[in-house]
Length: 102
Length: 170
Image (tube, rainbow over all chains, first blue to last red; front, side, top):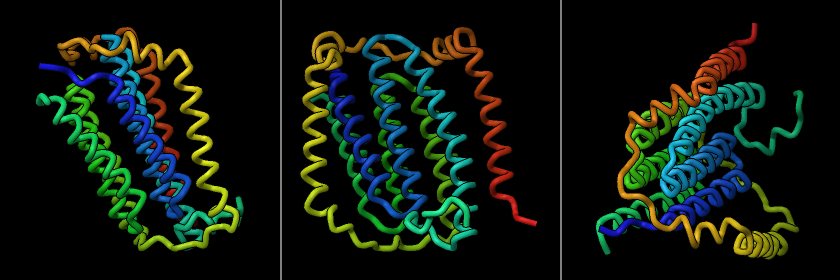
């Protein structure tokens, strides 16, 4: 049974990272921008797992574990900030958030 | 075409399609659902790479906890369709050529760097057996014990931060 080469996974990871970056740049909705960040983190995780497999070492998988933990913490704090911003501005559009203090 | 190849291309297609949908749709809740699609297909890819524990964590923590948090906030804020905004006048003629130029520069730099050579030569043939969860936990609780404990403090701080940020003003 043939195995999929690691480079395929790396290309997929790069494509997903690029699409996540596009989402961050193009989207206007602050929640969707957050989803773009999560997508980029996922793409990096895929690259980590692929490299860990290629080198036959565990460290990459441990890194993925930590990335997931940090992503969870980041999502919690980030969404709290989104809730606070939306309470103050009554809008999810990031182009309305051009001032630090309202 | 063997089974792993078909599975890989199926999941890769699903993941890319989900990522493109995330960008194209205008309702945040639809974006969230397409992101869940990406995460599910990535979990299958982790299984294909022999990382069963990471695949389980991906589904439980990412598709479960984090995306539920996203959907919860979308519903709490009653997030509707994204507002359309006008593109800036410079963006249309300049944006695409400049983005393409940047892509060319990065691709050229990458193809000449050591990474490309490593991927092309050494790292092509993965070993056949997967990583056991036992070995992963041994690494996590022995070699990486301090970072593991440090994450608990990180999560505590994130919890406090979220509570303080989202509380009602007096």
